[in-house]
Length: 293
Image (cartoon, rainbow, N blue to C red; front, side):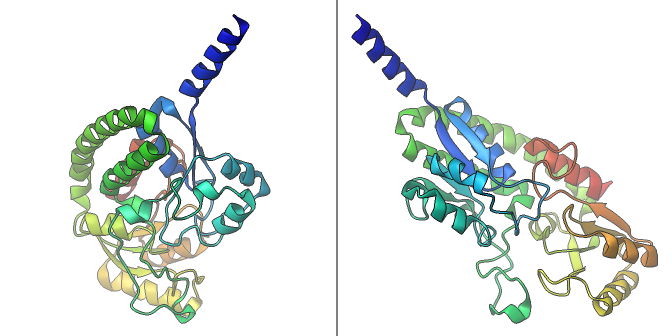
């Protein structure tokens, strides 16, 4: 009788065991949770308060990767400076690139801003294209589909659950996109400058023109000469808004604002990057509210 009870407990534990999913960034964790639901335990490695290019590869992150059944990354080179050494030390072959337990979100979307020439002379360029595609909320649809497929591969017993969750999420998200697209219409035709080419997917989607970046080249801090060139551009084109991310220094954008009467708008780059953005909807709502009102 004891053996039967023990066997029942073991079978029950295996049936209700959750899949361990690790994501590189918080927004991916939110999408995984939507699709995975009760069948997954999700952990994001990076803090949304940090520059996504330069996450500190803390040793405390290694056990999370060691126990992972599935790793979901942003891709397009965004994690190249911090994730590879963690993966190497985690010694979990199942989640290495190319394996069943590895998913690259950038493979599900169409990347923009692919450089014609890759050279350090052009700054910190991404050879495959701009990796900040989360800023276009329409990209969550193909990414959610890809995640559902990956979860089904890793955990085929729950494939039906993942497909039902995916359908529910897509229905909800498409309805939300109609609302969000309507809110963004008032921004169409707006001229802006931005600190880093972080918001290009958002700007392209909604017909907003970025006339300059405060960085002279990607990843290069603003110089005095370039700053005054940006001031000229703002004055000449009557630019009213400077898009500033939460993690770069704000001294330069504030200086430019003082010289031009343009307004500095801090936009989040990830869920949780600024207060009131703990959900996917709140994240995008914050962008719309700050940019278009």
